[in-house]
Length: 164
Image (tube, rainbow, N blue to C red):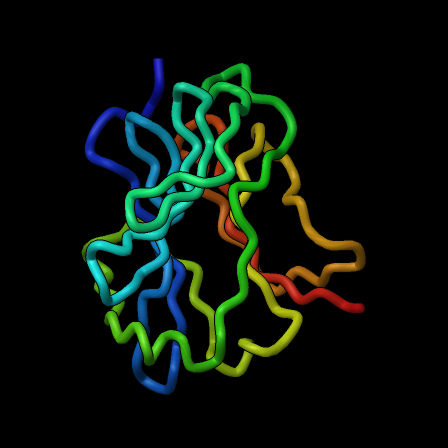
């Protein structure tokens, strides 16, 4: 039986700009699966990536699914590492989204300094067996990593720089 029943486990990716901290992405583990939610100002947009307990994986935006396929089950038999999504954050994206980070809403946060947002810097969200490694580009330099190990598979949220 899963250690996570209810409520959902929420983890934030946020950008620190001077004294302000802005929410850019939400990672949610729920009874139905793991989601990476891209914060946007249009509630109908709702862009997100999901890997469901049913093994279904897809990207979704404006209620339309893309890149649908099946992956391994999200249970104690999960093996290896599977990338959920890798993305960059533009240096002004957090101000455009303009959603303040609220500490009471989340179990943790991967905080990124605005000065770290430059070409070649990415965030990778991976699902992995316990003590697994993220899937990164060749010669990637890990800047920092958050490990969400409340259940199996673990969720790795990695800020890294890709050296060309």
